[in-house]
Length: 67
Ligand SMILES: [Zn+2]
Figure 1: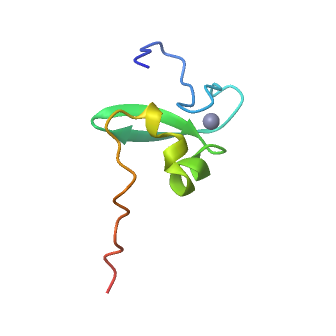
Figure 2: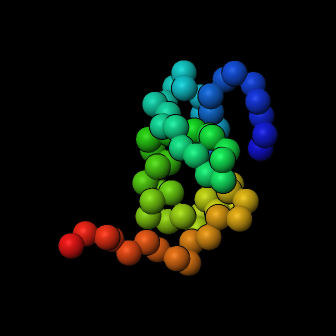
């Protein structure tokens, strides 16, 4: 998981930026990448990706802070 090679890969499907657009994300001060096709999974079904992020909790959905 701590692959420091220069090739950027999706943290979920491990496809490279050569084949999919990647979005930079950060968690616990660890920057990583996720592709646009896996991003909805992280948003809507984070339990499926929780093993990719040590200590990530999914049981505390944020409350919108809009007035
Ligand atoms: Zn992906």
